[in-house]
Length: 454
Image 1 (tube, rainbow, N blue to C red):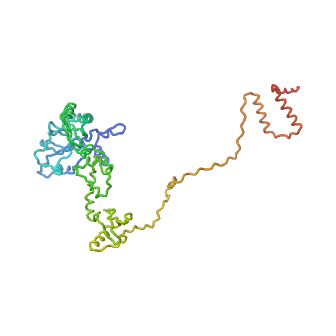
Image 2: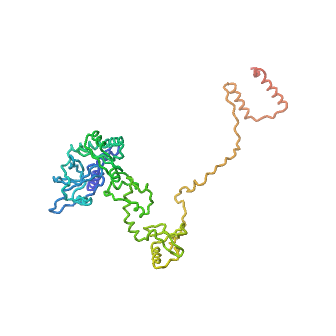
Image 3: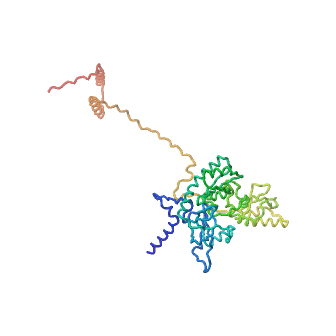
């Protein structure tokens, strides 16, 4: 009984993550089609795990009255719960907006909201924090879902109008306010855009208040989302909130090839992940000599060709012999530089060269599991020579005759074939010749046979 309850509780806990996604036909997932706004908050972007949810506050301590509310895509804002509503993660609430009200979903409550506000340089005790009006009623939810369904058609129509007016801009996303009193158009543009005629046509076409908001290319990728070259979801749309500037020097320090197609992300800018390991590379580079510095030996000056930071190896080549590289470790290079500072010169790079490890293992391919030969396609197959056919061809048999007389003749001929041939004399040959002549006489009539008397 205990085991049955245990497994049942696990199943309920897992299925509650997104119950609507499992209700489909023929075993196929139906999908909630809420675009990341399901009530369980399991498929949201930038979701924060509340690890203080099971901990009680000390006695006499009042809970923090500001909550974090998420709107479409990755837009999150902080609102003050002045009505002392019992809010939990996943609740839909009506919040203060200008004008009217907006509908969003609670994503974080409690003391972690204070940490998030400090992270985003917001004052937790400021007086200008907007308020939470109430929990969203069914009418609020119906209006909100209705305008959310219109957003794709409005975005398509707004792009057509902008193209017709010849404006150099790209409308990337459209967001309706929860009470349908305002619509926000997010766009990207390289130059300043004149919106006077565009806003007039938008207001006439969509019959609502229009707001244009310009965003950067990184913010556009964060709102739309996607899959990066690493095979995972974009960092900007899942967890990254602050977009630091990325320079090409970050790729140089990490010794990456300056290929813009590989270094650029979906936003067209340098990838944010170039900054992740940059600090580690900068700390490791401090131990190395500068790449431009030359080391002096008795055979001449040597120039650095390549550096492996984490294995602490450097490759040097003489100025006269640029094609032949010598592999040195970091300690040897620092020793040569120290001798150079003392006014001494090393004999040559060959003295400090790292000798490759000699391996006596005879590595060869062995067909252990009975596989085909790896070189079976290297040589073309030889054509087999045909053997000479010494067998005699069978003789052509005569066609069957339809008449009964021919059938009798064929039977008699078959009997004659099996008989032994008789030795013919000259007299017999003459008789046979006479018989053949009579047969081939006029009308080819056979000679009548004499009937025997009874």
